[in-house]
Image (cartoon, rainbow, N blue to C red; front, side, top):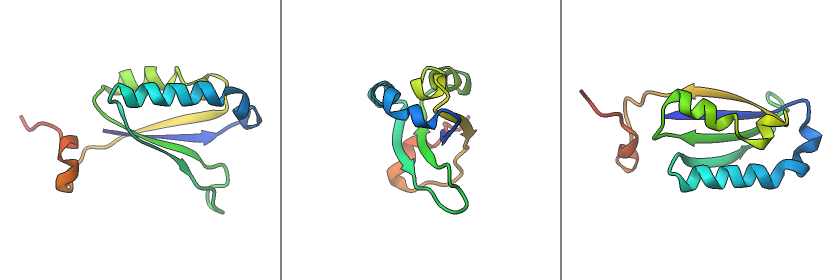
Length: 103
């Protein structure tokens, strides 16, 4: 399971120009069953750049890196992306599908 943080970058002002492509990229990730939550990060005093967050699973780290590189916002430097892998140790029953298989 992964969290992807998209932080506004040098070309933030270009966001409207590439928004539809970014939305289409998100929609594709959701339809593929890879993105399970997508949302905006609200700006704060600690994080004035804000941006967005994506929870992803059902693919490898390398595959996710390749997928993120296809986001028009990333390509056009509207955002930078950081990917964090999470190994769940404990989950609510509703999220049991995120628990890695035990060998």
